[in-house]
Length: 132
Image (cartoon, rainbow, N blue to C red):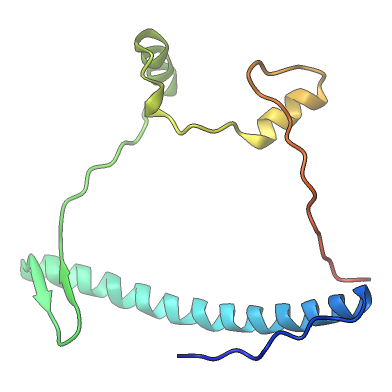
């Protein structure tokens, strides 16, 4: 199990940015390593799936892991207009995710339109960027 150093809090905002920059660089290094390992894992996973399908194996066991193939069915919309008409007619709104598209909402607000049932929620966000 990895251990982390005790967090040293800054003495001033400028020092906070320097600490953030160092931590960001460290995190990005870890993320790059993790992405490379994940890519290898995904390639072996695809190979295993293809091998199991080719050999007709519904499952396999190793010393620490096991794997099974199973058929999964998921929805894919082929005609959005028909789906929307169905939902309007039946009231089956649970067929859709329950969220508002932030970009579409912001575009309407910027154009001076209101969207009934939706209000703006304002929060403070810290953005940190590299200085030119």
